[in-house]
Image (cartoon, rainbow, N blue to C red; front, side):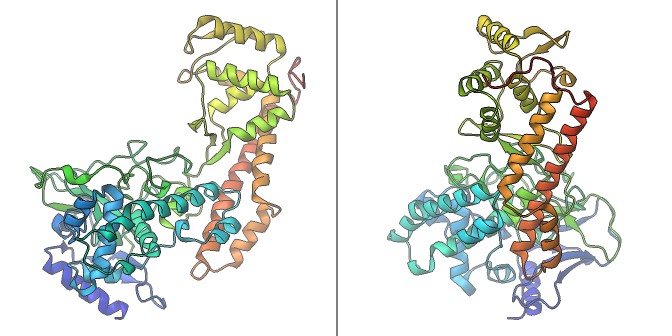
Length: 518
């Protein structure tokens, strides 16, 4: 079925399901695309005004664990959250024309090209050095484990009536990619689901035109609140290295992408909720939050996400993304310290830092520090470098002051640079300027060099040339991986400038008494 005929059938299906949408919306497919299900965008045929309700979607038209033909089977198998939704999507796709969502599923791609679906060789060659390299490889192993331990046993149940060979691990990965990149939070009862029409809007960072909301009882159309590990859907400071309950990072705690999210956590069961949705409205609404001129594309946003998160979850990147971040592992900091100081001193200084209540992001098995888009390091890293570089007598005094209190949140006061500086527990505001010594500046530059070495021998300039030569449409994996490498390496450039500014501001001199190897 050609793309145009699929779209006609989809519109007819939406009308049958009670989906309403404005005549001012055009669902446009990319011309010249060889794919039978080409990318779709939403454009304005006429001027759209802030506050306009441009679509109304019955929740019963959404593909969820509760509405799927596989709902009883999913309940029997106790597949909750993301696992249940992935199984429901696979089940409906295999039903083919017998599925309630056949026409909707026909306009979807078979999968989204997120790194989870790349081969190991592609991951190693394209993502080496980036924030995603290790994470995506771990994802693949965890998703395969989910299929083997949770999905495969369902195929052996007596109540499973379809052909088990249709539920392959490849099909599960494909479903995973669609759920990760297209699912929305519907409400408490339905949980997360595939929402027809809503997933046609493309993403634009911090420049969305619509919000997808739950119609409230008083018709105020207040935005549906979601649950994010940062609570507000802002991933500008959250790392791709953060862990999750059981499934891969692709399926970590749902992110509020203005109600556009990637699914539940894969644990527990959403089926324990009541069979009714209480006082909640049976509809979702798509509301304009700003004016859009005729002929312009209408955008949603998937959240305040840097390129690592966008590529990881959705398979694309954006130029000049203001939410990009870079991580420097604690292991890199420790290796830098060991290159200057003894193992005993490095461990002792790290211990002082921890006793003062400081820590990096993540957990102690995978701890790291964030560098912001403008190249400014996380305060906790500055404090650690400062403590690492303290003269021996001041380090000993600090250790005694912290250890003597018996409390990790007590302030440790001592004289530094002939001024009293208070280094206190994480959450307080140390005198940051006094932390920015020439030694700290030099250390930051060394850390930038160590982090840069992970990308291999090619330079930033060579990466830029490679990106400019490749075709985004036909070489998407190469293009977006280069975009990620370039955005990260530009942050390292800014970190070097930041460190040079510190050294320059202090006259380029190391602080007298700064320790060398003991």
